[in-house]
Image (cartoon, rainbow, N blue to C red):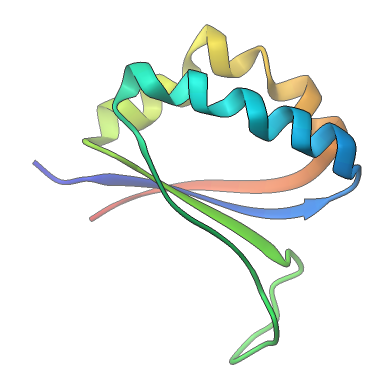
Length: 95
């Protein structure tokens, strides 16, 4: 079975709200057996500039779990807070 990775490219608009959102996400990941791989900031551009300076990568056991998490009631309840706190481009990859 192939893993799935959620990659979020992020521009934070409100640090306080973003911290609140980030503190609530882990509880939504646990039922889907997800693992936070890393969070990072883009210190400088190597090839092409991304308009988003922050990134998060979350690994799931499979595409089914990744999609299940993203469509879950628990995660969807956080979307309004996320939208106020940051601009996020989220993509799921299989590897």
